[in-house]
Image (cartoon, rainbow, N blue to C red; front, side, top):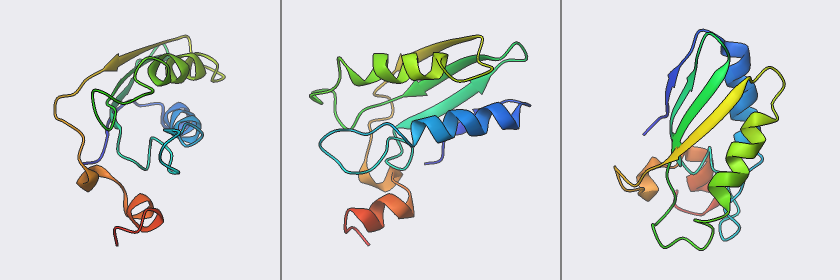
Amino acid sequence: MAAIIISKNTELVQKVIDMLKTCYDPEIPVDIWELGLIYEIHVSEENEVFMKMTLTSPSCPVAETLPPEVEQKLREIEGVKSAKLELTFDPPWDKEMMSEVAQLELGFM
């Protein structure tokens, strides 16, 4: 499943994706973008970022820390006016959501 991206500001979206590639679930050596944890990125015309993401499971040990960390990193991106992250488990994450890069890294291909 690829993330839904809603924005005319492709440069800012790329900055968001680049930042997401620096965030890791500490138990899995793959970034949250390649893991398929990002469901939606919306950048408004005012450069306000809204992102919907999930975790590998509701009982993920970083459920309390990873989402606020990602939200803070979104706010620190040059050009971002504000950032809001919504955590969801619908649909539940599944290994099929990972990119080919992640699947290769983890030995699923």
